[in-house]
Image (cartoon, rainbow, N blue to C red; front, side):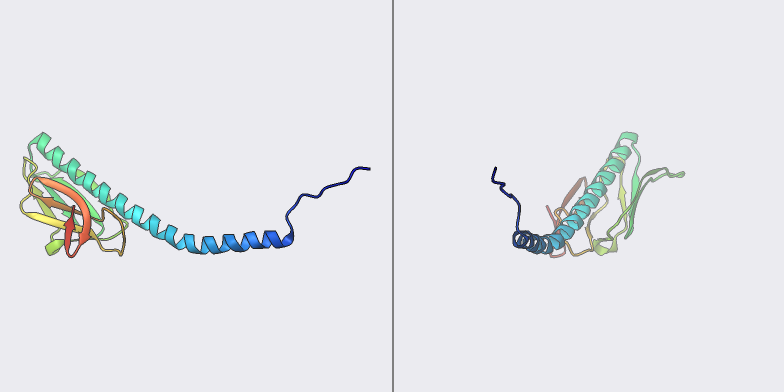
Amino acid sequence: MEKRVNRAFTLLEVMLIIAILAIVLAIAIPNFDRYIKDYNIQKQINKLYADINYAKFYGVAHQIPININITQNQIKALTNQTNPVLIVQDNFKYPISCSDNTTLITLNAFGIAKGSVNCFVNEQNNANPNCFKIEFAKISTGRWINGNCKE
């Protein structure tokens, strides 16, 4: 007669593994939520950067000035003509604030902005980038530190 060998986990071993998994998940899930939020903020800033660059290059290619209007939850770029043409329109999940409460940015036919503006995401976050800056012909993204967008 053969001797039968049982290969299985005891109830104690299974309970111990479940307890360890519960502790690890309790630590990991809140960090995962923050990671997702930071990722979405980065994605929003990168999309804004792309929208502004697209509007800029559209204006340069067609040799027309562009008005970019940034509100708390939306960006709109229109040609600065008698009959404006909508170039870009996008909505934000996270509210945006701009320095000096600037909401209208005008780019001339060469893509150069009149003045400069810093805009950032209002939400508490660790995202990088979480802001963008327009200075004359340069558009850049960065990290919001002490009231300024640092590249």
